Amino acid sequence: MICFVQQIRGITMKANKQVTWHRPSGALRFDGWRVAIIGGTGGIGRALGRLLAALGAHVVVVGQTFRDAGTPGIEFIKADLSLMSEASRVAQALPVGARPKLTR
Image (cartoon, rainbow, N blue to C red):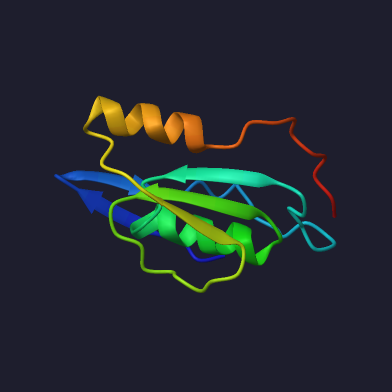
C-alpha cells in the first residue's frame, strides 16, 4: 500500500491505512433513474452528470452554460438561480416521481 502524506498550512495528515477501497462486483446501473444536477455545467457536477448518464440515468443539468450538447442521456435547463423567478421556473420544470430500484 502506498502511504500518502499531505501537508496543509503546517498540519501533516497521513492516509488511514485501515481504509480500503474496492469496486463492487457486477456493473452498477442507474437505468430508469432521473437525476437533477444543479450547477452541473462544470467541475465535479459535470463529471457526475456524464458518469450517471453513461450508467443509464436520464440526467437533467441546471446551469448557465451547457457544454455537453449531444451527449446521450443529458438534458439541459438554462437558468440563473440567483434570481427567484428563475428558481421557481426550474422547480416547475423538474420532473418529480418515485425513485426506481437500483440495479446491478
